[in-house]
Length: 412
Image (cartoon, rainbow, N blue to C red; front, side, top):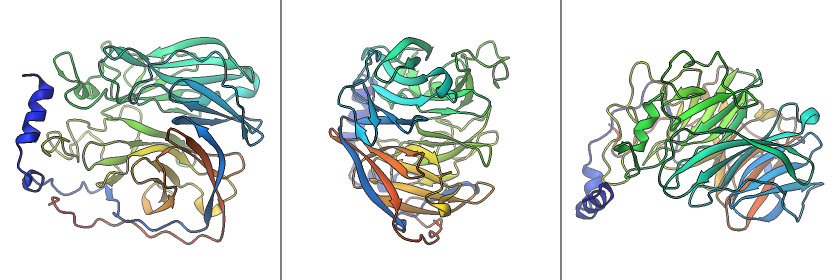
């Protein structure tokens, strides 16, 4: 019997009350805030449609002239210019593995784009039996990509088409952070074990954030650079599937939102060399059978999440607000949600502690969130006919209500 059939048989054989009789998880770590199940609606912002007809859009990058690049997961790069979608896709985009979660994923402009015209793309490459996460860079002419080169590829081809990670974020030192997912849920396996175990193996890129120079080389001061066994560029370990990644200039912090397994989506504060614990330490359960994932919920030397959503929101794109249109939002985080169909405003104090959480309703799967040069908040919806929308001021905003740790069935 295969691992997959064994898991399926166990699920079918389990009684209906299995989830309620599964071992209870211990209390939350002291530094983790539990999100309220029903957060208040964020006042003072209204939603506007900017463009539509995008096929499963994934990434959004504004350029210095106010135009924007948008990726479509099937493998197209689109241009938004003067507030309208250019009909013809950008030429010169690399071929992608567009299956399930794979495809053309994030896009970001070089910090000196005005001088060098460089843009960076992440995408899934390969086949259903052997695929990787790639980063490529190219010069954008306004209608095409030229001189495209692959500057990074995850080092172990895997089966299945999930958990590619693929978010991009620049640090002030000109290095590029790239999130790489753990490769997939059980029964996806690599080297005779569930592939998610690779998140704790520094020799593998799966389940990591890597840090690269703008040409794809690895900085000499990366935290694992002296480890001969470490995969090139590894910066942090123990991640499941980061779908939101942002650098917070005011706090000199890196924030990441991660899809958990059952009942455990996370906001994490990540640092060079940190171990976020997955899958050895987890606050989640297995999708099949409901057993806790991991050996513990917290452990010395591993970093606990800052915020836990124990009812799935499926966090996606992440942005730090630094615009002028919403003064009350300065320094706060905005996380898209694929399941709760909204954008979460996460109100932070100066040190990065959570003060509150509110929701901006969208009503569709939110894949990406970015702050535009006009200070408005832009979102992409992940649909067959996806939309680009933006939130603009509507009325003075009130302070959000702080989420509190409240009792949940099954948490003891």
